[in-house]
Image (tube, rainbow, N blue to C red; front, side, top):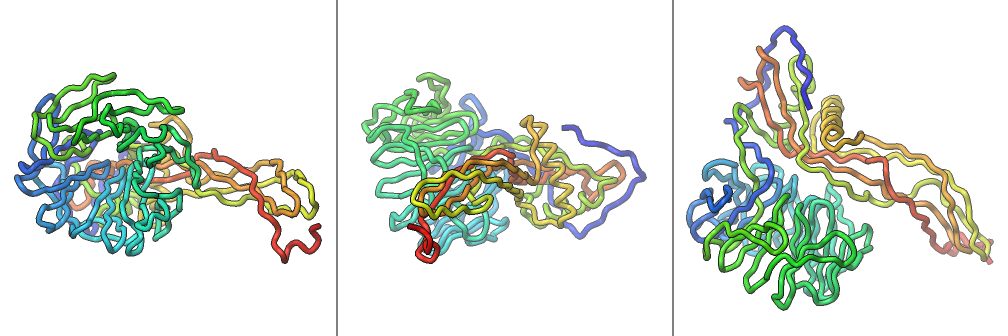
Length: 477
């Protein structure tokens, strides 16, 4: 999407802002490997670049929001800065710590609870102590499994609000892809439908582990007979390779990688694989961002103080500053179910069907901490970026009005409930100051990890009912 450029008298904007050197902008996805020799990023072919020194990592975690390494001495967890061997210390890594990198956020789990990274070494607690045994994340959100096996919960995006979506018995495992949530148990593999509803997509005893990402869902057979890729419907799976002892699989945005004692391999399709790393060179693999240099750009995260300041200033200086939003990913998901229209009481003993009119307005949300006037301007930019990239209209709010039939059983209260479809875009905002103007000496900024969530206008409507209570049933037979 081309930015509108206006020729106006030059001006100089001088905020209280400390500029940082130009950084690399992440795009696409590749694979990284970790061993006692260090951390290496794949360049293509059989070429790898070392990005962390020998002995500096005993585990790596990757996703759209970056690449992490946990130090083997427990001194901390570090986030890759996108060039050379430069890493930023972002937190401690005590015994039992676990990390998850989603498309737009970084989360950590420890005995003290679940935490979301704010930038620097600052974290916000989003789940209480002792409420998570494991966490799982991806484009479709963040999950935590309760340590007592009572259930698995999906984060609602704010505060410490979680939705219970299913049970979590012994041996359960979960995978969050770009647009779906899957669970594995001894009973098979299941896909989440919303609420606490799941659909079985693989029979009992057919999966020892599952792996997922933008390029799909995999299951490894417990007898080592192979690894299978889900075909997207029913219980249809395609065998794509073998799954011997010690195998690990990584699904990135656009590719599938496998690791075994024989090396690292990239899937070509069918059952064909290409070896990209020699035998014994990888203890673990993880998705990581492919780096391209954004020359002349100063990069800040949208949730950093500097990022917020740049957006605020540009939004208030539109005569000398333009913004362009480039979404890196977009997904839809069902929002929380909520009542619409009036409740209807049926005091007879027979089911009665009523005609009920209802209206529903659903609002948007975002990760921006700026003024309301700046937010309105930035949302306009985001709407244009999403509409241009994904060819559909997308706005900050949606109002729907309809008339539906509502069957209400005898001696019951009935109502209509709606789950509005929501769309989430994650991407970068390019901020450009016109010639002759600058912000602390810089004209171009890349504000990364800007996330916008808005209703699409679609959604599902269902009829709900419950028996009348004792206080309500005075005239019920």
